[in-house]
Image 1 (cartoon, rainbow, N blue to C red):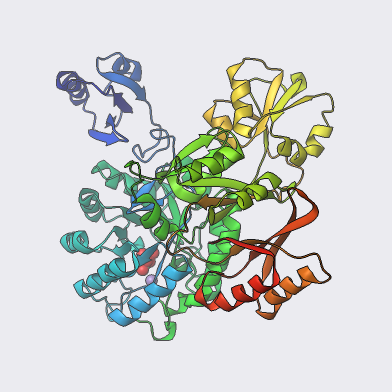
Image 2 (cartoon, protein in one colour; image 1 turned 90 degrees about the vertical axis):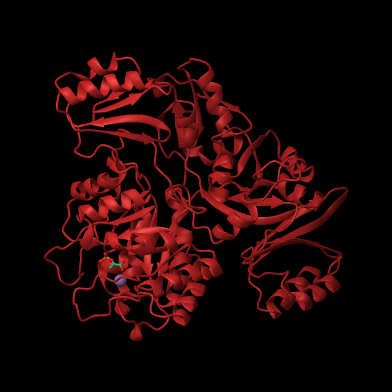
Length: 625
Ligand code: PEP
Ligand code: MN
């Protein structure tokens, strides 16, 4: 049972509750969770929950049927985020922890760190105290190793994860490390669990070699019961009878964990499979199954690694895996963000010219719209979203510094380009600083209890009606009402209690406005993606520079466009998008918008830029990002 106390509970009221529990021989613990004061008790001390609910100072009582209480989703219905520096484990962005099994020396570790950082890892791992099966195997570099990890953090900005094997290492761990790992062999070392609970640092808790999910969660409960709720669960394979797969990676634990607990869960395919060729397939599957992140062993010379060389990816293989995850993540409503750490230092920790702390990002529509979601997925939850009501308003907000960034939908894979925004990109002197792709899933949304047969009127954005054409054709008698964005559509129906009206929008807006999904995924084609660009007044420092966008016009003579495209071809520059738009006031003349897979602003491309300038009438680089 969880007794949630009123925020203004007095010490006397609290003592009265505790003495009832003591008299009834209940084992209880006082805890705080998300700022709430809670008393967790085993049993009910001979009273029913209603008895406690009536006591002064009690807000509500939650009976918890499971053996684990603090980790249970019943206590904390929202997903928890474990913050490690600027990195949120749990949330919209996938967190990849990478590095060698063990810290083996300064040069090697720094070289591996440089590689994994470049390929998109956000946390670095490396063991300094290694729990080895054989006492004759390398046991780790100890404090020397921790010092190297601290240097990795300082040079590359990646917070570091390392394993603790005894409470005696607590002081050293506190000094050098950001996340403390409890290894599989120590999952039920209860003194160690209590000790990391008291350290208060984020804990990565591996599942034991033959632990049930409930045993694993009970171990997490030990850490939370000491007052530390920063626990990340890590599945790393369990012992079964099958030798070919080394351990059996229990990916089915992901949905189970997501249902039972609010804690984030990551997957370690390296220790699960023990061999390099199995790591990437399992990593891809883990992200598709809904994991919040991965822990991957990477080594630049695995044949000479002191431990786990056979399961360590080469840096280039890790890079390839990250590219695959970048494609997979949007399918399950997440993102791989190659600019994660740089964004944190350049965007989150800056002060606006008006003195306000933190940056603002403008998006079109209401909270819960797809643009809002794109904003959250690009920046995480550390930038303030600013709703605006038109695309021009969005560009104006960035120009006038009312906002630092703007989230601009440019094209949809089913409905095509958002032409207005192409024109605004040309008109305003702003930069494209990033891009993000969302999978767009539409749902029919109404008040709880609405019957599809009773619906007469539907609200949504006109593009959404196009994307759901087949579904809407089956309901030809519905009246379609266009509004500015999908969240506004849901707000409209939520403000009236009319069960003949419904909206088409994403799941998030239904949750925000307390509506239900009457039918899910009603878009005609599930390959429905929208690409947004992020605009700002200046480029982000250390942007990934994987892509550049530019706009140009040519003279009206034979082969003019061919001449420009030939420059790209001759310089081996891959063109990934070409779009033309009429030039206002000059009928039948066009601007060409191109996206290129290079960083056009690097000095190496100065020659190409010069060639281009000689072949076009007008040229504007919109940004490299
Ligand atoms: C490790 O992560 O290096 C490790 C030893 O893992 P596990 O405890 O899962 O075997
Ligand atoms: Mn290892």
